[in-house]
Length: 280
Image (cartoon, rainbow, N blue to C red; front, top):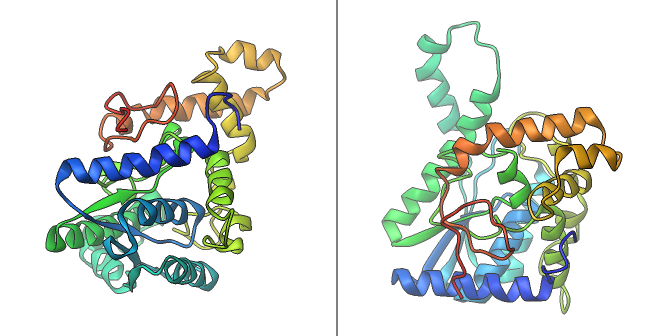
């Protein structure tokens, strides 16, 4: 925790209330979200179930060839713990069809890069929105504030949705929120909480391949955002110059994404998105 004003119990209440008010205001009762087996989607699913009732929350598990069996099992365990409906929709064949059609553009000697990773996220976003349209359900976004701050997300993919539920909560605080949700019984699987974060968009991928450890990243982000500190001040405090430069560079490059994301349920004093608001 980096902010005295952010109490996890109060944040939990605000998020549950915010989801409920957002759906009530839209006149829609049902929610759809992707369940990856990761901490973010698990927390959002638990919050949505508390806010809307288990009968109104539906989960999609959309594994690719890079999804691990334990992540799929964690997602299933979460859905069954919450007693929500879910479907497993593998995206491998869809992805391969896209790549086949793109071969004349990418070329026969195409080298894998972020385009192939983002394509998987956008396929998942399309499937979620198809359900949203078919069954009059709002798609819940599961990105957190740490990811959003540095652009670690795919436009029209995992940044899509009707509302961003935890995008004003840093990653380290998401873990605290998960522990709070589990305070009376095990809802979120322990392995979801303890495993290394990964988007699972390529073989063996970990968030740490692209980002500093979240404890350090969140300290830097919170210091620059809520703390109002300058990069120079952080250097004086001993933050590594190369890491700080990388983070501030990513923050600058993420600005165009912030202009296109859904509204955020406001929890802190300084959400990243101007259209964020107190819904409760």
